[in-house]
Image (tube, rainbow, N blue to C red; front, side):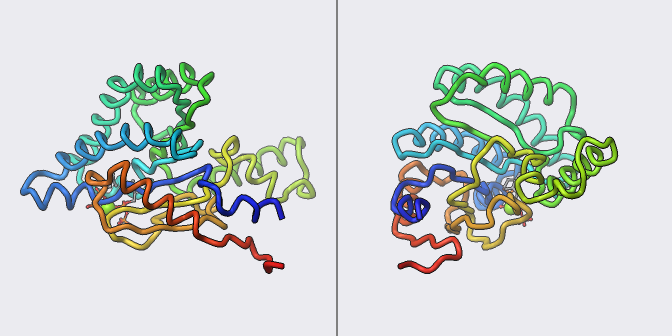
Length: 241
Ligand code: IPE
Ligand code: IPE
Ligand code: MG
């Protein structure tokens, strides 16, 4: 099987649940937002490490559909951080050949933030060195639900019939429709759960849970996690001959 032949290669698509910012700040007696700022600073190093490690696609979980449950001040602080981050990093991302995309529901995000997201997507659309996808107001169940709703609408309009519905058609309605499935999902901070991240797409992903809190996760540790991945035997349900 061609997929088995790839098993020893670097993961083409790595997805990261960047967790532990709050605890990182608490350990230092600082407010949670201090940890989010430190976490945001880590992103660049990890993105920049991708090309030499053979990672073509990097998807990072920045804000979940459940994160609205946090205090108003933490949510507002995060939204303001995202806006500033996009303004500050836009030129560098563009110049480093990064193609940036966003997944998640934009409806609940503020207009100014959405405008910056749209601009950055448009500006970097021709880049191909690394494909960075930022999951913002993203939830796997929400994504599948929105996809099912759009699919139902297409059927209602007579453009599709129920006979057309298969896994491929449904996947075509997901936010990730242009991306390959993740090969490896990494979660920092010691929690061993996926918290509604890429539920559909990770059906056959490998998982690595590391204890390091996200603001301490270095390119060096990233490389180590990737080398552990290369020893895994991915069978995709088949039996090795
Ligand atoms: C991850 O860090 C960032 C977001 C969810 C926005 P947390 O804020 O969840 O940090 P902990 O898990 O409380 O330490
Ligand atoms: C997952 O982390 C979401 C992001 C990293 C953006 P959470 O900290 O929100 O997840 P739970 O609440 O521990 O499951
Ligand atoms: Mg957390």
